[in-house]
Length: 299
Image (cartoon, rainbow, N blue to C red):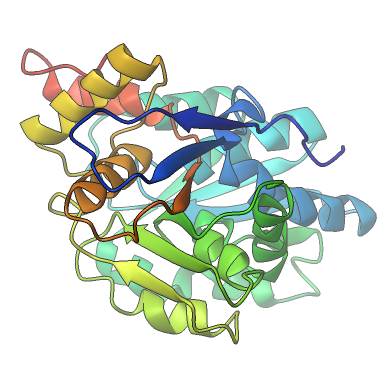
C-alpha cells in the first residue's frame, strides 16, 4: 500500500466572461483510485496502515446514507482484509440506496441510528472497552481523525506549482485542516461547506492547525448536505460537457460552482492562481439520480 502519485493538476481554461485573468487548476484527486478516490484514500491511508500494524480486524465508522466515506471504507475493508461496521445516520430508509447497496456488497454491516442519537456519538461507547473490543478500531465520520488529516497534508505536498489560493469541499473539516496546516504565509485556503449551518467546523479546523490563512465559505451548500437544485444540476452537466470532467452533486459540484461564481465577482485577486481539489465522490451521483427519478438528471 503506497501513497498515490497519480493525482495530476489540470488547468481549467475559463471562458471570456472571466475578466480578472485568474488561472484555475483542478487537482484530480478523483484519479487516485476508481473506488477509494480523492480525499477518502488520503484519509484512510494512515488509518489502514495503523490497523494493519496493530493487527486490528474490524473497523467501525459512521456516516450519512450517501457517504463517500462509508462506500470507500467498505471497499477498503474488503481489499485490505478488515471487517467493517457502518453506523448510518437516520433510520428512515425503507430500502438501501446505491451507496449503501455498494457498501453492503463489499461486506459492510449496518447499524441504523436515529439522528438524535447519532449526534451524541453514544453508540460508540462500547467499542472503547479495550478488553472486550481490542480488535476494533473506530474511524470517525468522514475519516477525519489525526491520521486522516495527516493523509490530507499529502494533497498539499503533491502540488508542484506556485499558487495563491487552494479551495476544497468541506464535510467534516478534515481535508481543509490538513491543507491549511501546510500553507505558506502568502497562500490562502478556502473550504466550501456542503452543509448548512456548519459554523462549528471553524473550531474543528482550528483544532488541527495554528495557521490563520484559511476561511470557510458558507454560501454554496444549496440547502444542506445532499441538497441540490436545477441550477446546480445544470452547472454540473455544463462542466462535464465543456471540460469532460465529472463533478459530484454533494461536494465538488458545489465547490466548483462557488469558485466560478466568486471569480466572476472578482473575489480573487487579479492574475492569481487557484487550485481546486477534486475530492472524488462520483459514486454519489447514482443515489442523487435515484432521488431525481424523472426530473432533471445529472450526466
